[in-house]
Amino acid sequence: MITAIPAGAVPADTAPAGAVPAGTVPAGAVPAGTVPAGAAKPVWKKCATKDYPTLQCASLQVPLDHAQPRGRKITLALSRVPHTSKKTYQGPLLVNPGGPGGSGLTLAGFVASSLPKGLAAQYDVIGFDPRGVGKSKPALNCRPGHFAPVRPDSLPVTEALEKANLDRVRAFAQGCASKYGDLLPYIDTVSAVRDMDAIRRALGAERINYFGYSYGTYLGAVYAKLYPQRVRRMVLDSVVDPTGVWYDANLAQDHAFNSRHRAFMAWVARHDATYRLGKDPERIETAWYAMRAALAKKPAGKKVGASELEDTFSPGAYYNGYWPYLAEAFAAHVKKKDDAPLVEAYETFGAVDAAGENGYSVYTSVQCRDARWPRDWDEWRDDNWAVYEKAPFMTWSNAWYNAPCAFWPTGPKEPVDVANGSVPPVLLFQATDDAATPYEGGVTVHHLLEGSGLVVEQGGGNHGITLSGNACLDEHLTAYLTDGRVPRGDGEVDAVCERLPDPKPLTAKAGKEGKKAKGDKGSESAGAGAGSPKGAALHRLLGHRG
Image (cartoon, rainbow, N blue to C red; front, side):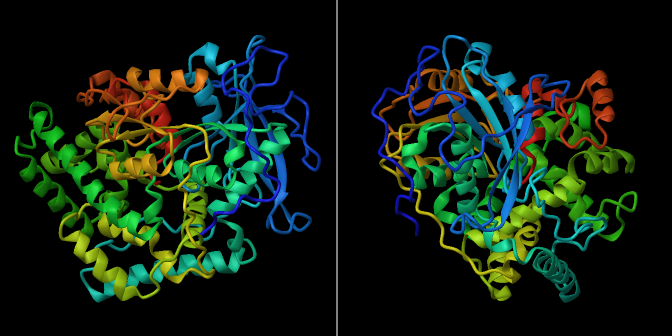
């Protein structure tokens, strides 16, 4: 349990947290170009993309072990959209898409372009690839091809299937140990938080602003715990329950994923005129599981077995913009015995490429190191079968995704108690029906972070809800980033926004656009039926795990 203030922390600022005129120092920042002693200033170079023409990139060396600052160094990849306002400068806004294992470089461009122009101009929006991720060096890939199809059925109904899956996860853990045994003790949330503070120092900022999605909310909460005096403003969207990291949190996810999958079945039933799968959600769900059983025996296109089917449909539990594409693939298989749309959906939403292998390698490395996991496989078996009885959709897929932690080569650390009465007001966003980070996590963190404000999207089921088309949510976000205002309510929740409408079935035009997205997992065109291009773009960046 880490509760001590780290060396180098200073008393909190007493200056106001609002915006200030140009030429003066905003609360928690130092004049541009001023870098504290011992910190190297990043050298920014253009790395513009078509979507983000002002994006800049740099790198920063940090200690592998922050307890040994003069020891081995690793390199973090950074990105920036610099502030342009000549009147107001509010300092750096670090952004993180979650994971663990998500790359944040492009997210900086997305956030800067999605905020109101006048507000974005007041911040240096800073993206970064956490240690081990993406363009940071070294980047992890423990076992290339780990997700290559066709994998064993995730449902261990026979000893042979259980053994086959256990052999896979043991091989993954052994691959990490043999390739990165010297790195694994330092791939964890607290080390990533120390890196964030190294970024702060290199930027010459006395305090930072932070905006994190999903696992990025836990990363932010831990930063706030270790460096409360270094936080100016903090936004946490789709909030991890820090009291369940990480074994219990994954079991809790399984129930929420099952409910979200059933919401998709109900949506298909409402659009029976399009999909012709019936008007009874339970019967449609039965047809889905019959499809799964058939694919376990004969994979579609020699690519999509039962496990790959789960990979394909689980993104729909994160973002309902994918539902029209998944429903078309489902209906084509059931009604027409046509596997092509299903294979295409797998390649678009479910297949794991090298970047996905890197993300998964960091995901396991962080989660397995952060906290204790059962080392007795009998405990995993009993717990997951018990959950499966009530929530069959993702339980065993999720279990095998995390199972390397049962055999991880490094010992666990203790989770950080993020309870905090010293940090400035934090703004939290949470959808009531979020599957990946269930609603209770947002409420828990609201209680743990004194003075925080909780904005709830009532009835919303997407994971990652700000800057994705809901104007009500974005108004609260804009107000907070403008002058630090958080809403205040009388009860458990401080403000409520209505959810966006569910998507409609694809039009002929949207269907053609979706086919152009083949191979681009969650591209902006994938999800056009949701009527929210911003939502599709955001979920491409957030990914489908954590």
